[in-house]
Length: 136
Image 1 (tube, rainbow, N blue to C red):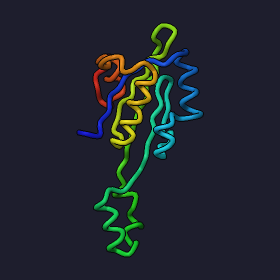
Image 2 (image 1 turned 90 degrees about the horizontal axis):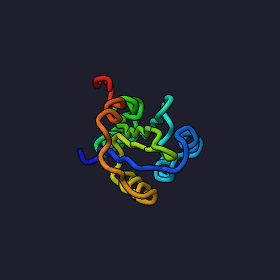
Image 3 (image 1 turned 180 degrees about the vertical axis):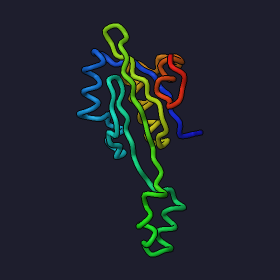
Image 4 (image 1 turned 90 degrees about the vertical axis):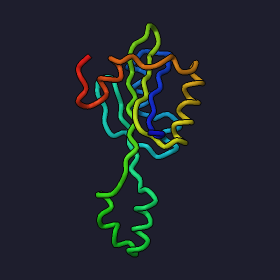
């Protein structure tokens, strides 16, 4: 799927500090696009953005707004999880999820500003983020 994103990069500082920064002030690409913090755990943050695809927008217009009563049933969700792991004195950030291509490009630029992508995520890192995956 073109909207899927898996990127890993390093950020200076300990994981707890970096995670707290992302919790209080989300990265510019996420804040600019309207993503909101939906969930957090001891080592990850999940951001979400709800939206209507163009067929749903057409439905709202053609029903003169009546379809808005059922908006929750046909909303789509962009969801991105950021995992923070210790990598020496730095933090390895893994971004995994489904985001708009515009947001994906901005997040890749942000990763490039921090030294670029550090390679493919290890299977154990990404498997702990996926529901139903085997334990690592």
